[in-house]
Length: 259
Image (cartoon, rainbow, N blue to C red; front, side):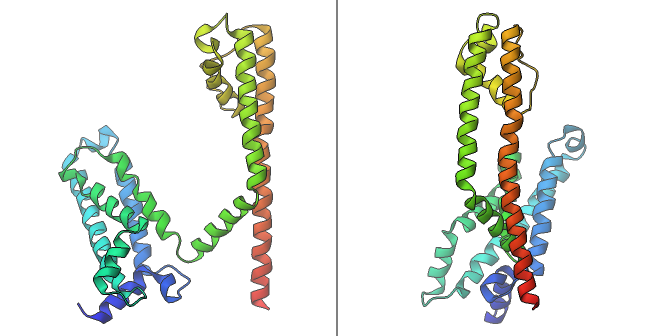
């Protein structure tokens, strides 16, 4: 194939590298294929559906694998367009060793696995990593960077909430161990055993599989549960404030660009 075709494909697969702010049509199509492949993998885990046409699902998975293989080969081929004076084969090897290229290769392997391995459904869900990689293009890139920046700016406050959560979980487990250890040794016979109850209570999940039976245990459990409500609200408030600042910065930036 000509150098012109290689350059065109490079622009389609790597819009930011050529100054494009939006994702290309080809990358959007790849994203659709990735989503379809993930949905197919999820549906295939339902026996009542998969058992009706097992060969069809294998064929579809293999077809997705071929598409991802073509994409992977294409990315390796256009890697020669990368800047630098190195020979084309050196650029291609260097690109193939990058984490994103290794993820691409892994996706190809697990997608073609129906002819090699019987069941790698969970591994096929790692195709979502490819979708995350494509999301770095265009406006998604700005959004992801801003979200990451907002979280990073609040990292110390979030670390404080994590430390507080650990203290509360340990306190709740120790308190219920003392109050319920003798009555329910299987559930609260040690602080380690009581940690499960403490975690699900503080996170306000409360599965109901373990519950205190003594008045003291119930009183302490009530305190732990109330603490859990505040514990969940703290990081939510911190992140909400960070995102609010981020949105305000977006509006100010957009207003400046208009004027």
